[in-house]
Amino acid sequence: MKLTVLMALASMTLSGAAFADGARLFQEKACWACHGKDGKTTLLPIYPKIAGQNVQYVEKQIQDIKSGVRATGNSAAMRGVLPLVSDSEIKEIADFVSKLKP
Amino acid sequence: MKKLLSLALSLSLAGSLAFAEPPASKQVGIDNKDYTWNAPAVEKNEALKLKGDANRGKKAYEICTACHLPTGAGRPSGPFPQLAGQHSTVMIKQLVDFRSGIRENPTMVPFAKTRSGPQEIADLAAYIETLCIPVEHGRYEGSDANQKIAAGKALYEKECIVCHKANGEGDKDQLYPVIAGQHYTYLLRQLIEIRDGARRNANPQMVNILKKLNDNDRVALAAYQASLTMEGKMCPANIATVSALPAPRKK
Image (cartoon, rainbow over all chains, first blue to last red; front, side, top):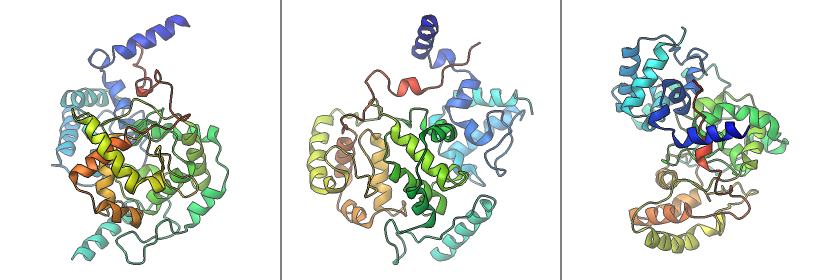
């Protein structure tokens, strides 16, 4: 028990780059709230399933929504979250999403 | 033209969200001459009367954690407000206002609209009210913080204290929000959005006050507000926003 607490504490202090993997970012950056934890059980039917989507496509769309180039549909909802997400994090999230089972 | 645009906007909004529960009552916002702040609304009145169950609320809150975090702390950088310890009455009003469309925010609205009804809203509000207010929230970081906070204090005591009270505790019965522990950038943004009518559910009294303020006043005011603490409601210093981050996945 003590060990688990210690490990949890250690991982907290080490968080950031060391643990920055797509799965954590997918949760931490709030993606799952709309797209579903599996990338396909979406909050509303107007939101896309993204599990297994092409990695380059995902990265491009996130970038375009962040910059405002893509401003159609529901992108306004997602844009509110993107100030939290850096370019390198976008790459990691896109990679994670592309590897989810469609 | 403006009317036509807003009509088109509301039509397209209504269209895109048509499958979600339509709002029970159509409310006019602050941009309308017939607007009254906190006008009675069926769903709000019902949720305010119901007894919220914090345990059920905790379950319902799971989806909220994505942005507002499990602690309710939101994000110190300001895109998402701190919610922990907010009056249940205020949470109910704001959630219902998001649902009825009188408070607009494209990120938040879909989450508000997918709640099942007054009971779930009351449960969520009850749970959020039980959370302690994190102490490590976003503050004004300028090198002139002391001067700004002092200037903000004077303004606050002149203009805000009647409703938001000495420690930013607001007023549960009047539906005035807790602002102690709120993030500086979030507060600053609200001061602007409320002044400009972007928050269509705003209190006109507050709008009138905010119209008198300049950029400096607003920064000072938000700096002071973000420095407020409510005795007995704050989290112990060592469990703050950091512990709210989801633990890294085990490899």
